[in-house]
Length: 256
Length: 198
Ligand SMILES: [Zn+2]
Ligand SMILES: [Zn+2]
Image (cartoon, each protein chain N blue to C red):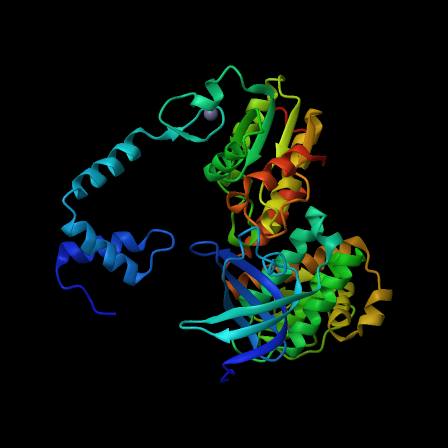
């Protein structure tokens, strides 16, 4: 896709890295132009008005101008900041994980209306603090599907048998579902977890808001999708290491 | 960009390229300057000496050539107060503001979950060890007001809360996204004086 020399777009800030001087390299997700890596000049200085807006987990309206090697932020206006999310370390980390996943699964410069809408929807639910894990799972599936890695959830990938309440096995290597006889050695998946995966993918946002899965099913979903994503990314997302650490932060740290 | 032909010159350019903020053009310009500079060997000696003699202060983890560092050794500093910062340059910035009389602790970085930088990559254990001594009454967490700085502050607060020490954060005078080392003295002094309980 050829981009205009100067254009305005809505974007979600996925990540940033310090550059020389007080500059930053900022990764944006835009609906029309997809993922873009742009340069923001002088944003680490206290006088910079843009600096605060170009932090990860901000929805912005940016003006981008073609520079020598990459686009440069010429103007920026914050549209949405997710303040409650940023003040809660656990939800913040989960939200950063979703941003990292979008960053790693999406290809730069490819239109991204659908993942953009899904990511924004998930961040809004995380901001509200309602069922953060459910929305995280939904986004994982949506991003996998959009980037061409969506797992098979209906039929055994080996024999084609359609699977239902009896459950089966879930194999990242095979690309999703296997029936029990075909999937010996793969991790078993229960009927309810299988049904939950389909629901996460097919239900509208309003329907999903009314859904509730038992904790055992939630754990199963998290474990299967995590293994699947590790396989796709050829390694675990960095943010997940920290999320795991948070879950086990020794609250009495005085002794060791 | 034209390639440098000579081996040693090319190597010098490559070495300079590793520095923050140095691009290929600047690296080449600097390399040519160094070659022509009659004092260049004194620069080389300074680098070697600094690398050999600069260590982490065993108390505040700041860079120093004596242990404990002059700040930690200064009897006039308030030992009940520790200001936690990301970077040695932040210590300089806060010292420039001239109002803070406590001690420091340098983390040498900030939590950055996406980049895989976790608590074990920072000088957090050393901070805990200092606090276990029991003479510290307050910890000011002066990490930058960036997303990572805030996350680090929240993590530290969670880690330190069980110790029953007062935990504060500089006031909102510093705008989000700004780095402490780029803040002016007045703003910085005001932010630290107006610190709030976390
Ligand atoms: Zn089968
Ligand atoms: Zn010291």
